[in-house]
Length: 384
Ligand SMILES: *Cc1c(COP(=O)(O)O)cnc(C)c1O
Image 1 (cartoon, rainbow, N blue to C red):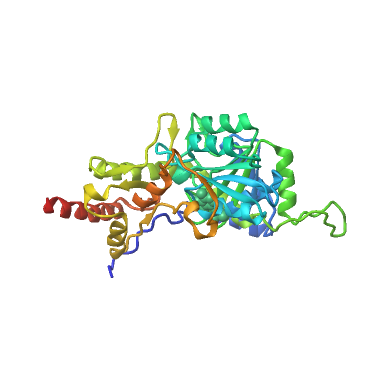
Image 2: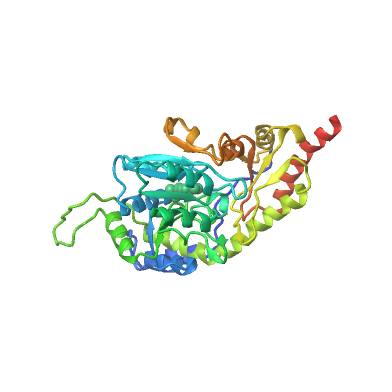
């Protein structure tokens, strides 16, 4: 085992200012899942994303669940969802007893294919109650196309922007296009509260309802009275303080992650068989994770061989998300590919790798990663 300290894919990166917000919470005894930091964090996220209102909750998953409740998703309804994503995008569909239908990616953004979405909607006997569009690895989906299709069918969009806070699409912040938009502040995200999430929307009435549902749906009465099923989903005032300090440095974090990406591209941009996740004209990727696909014929090793080699050097790398239509949990779910007989998400899963991308990774650490990948590439060129 290597003696070098471990290099992580994406680890929490504190700014140093978190403690003062936490101290405020302690000094004023606002230790509850409400308080000035929660209100402040909500306001600041709404302002940052350019949306009317935001509700701080205990996780991104909780925010997706609340969005589905607000859209009245019920048992037996269908909800469309990107297939190439983390399981949390789709789990809340199942919490409500609804049925997920998975939509493939397209190759230019790795995100939801407008073509596949259109076919799925044409094919639907009953329209879905919502479409959950994921902005993978920090890049927006093709929102103009997707919104136009969903508007035509009158189906509301939930943007799962858990990974894309700070990214932009045509000059607007990612996570501001859907009827509801979701951010996550889990420990591995671009900014973190250790655990937390945010539900964002221009519909302030709906967000009032979200806060109500997130605090056990307590009716306005002096005794504890409940007419609806609620949850304990609110964010603690202490964690919201961490989030406020993190949000102050978000743009720096985006720049740092983009610089990490640029250094990988500088090292390997010309390698035939390495294709980095593209960034289209008019898109601003936050490069939460640097991802690429590997052509095993051209470079002489597989993504798993690369991951294992780095792992032996105490460096964490990972395959791309396993698409949800391939997950045992969702066996039998309907799935619409980008084109007939061409599943883009399957290919991205087979060939994709995520490299260490933390904003707190030093240049020296990244040089180590680059060095070991370079060694693997050298072996191949010696063989030919
Ligand atoms: C992290 C993540 C979530 C879930 O967020 P949590 O805060 O961990 O519940 C949802 N969707 C995507 C795409 C994510 O990466």
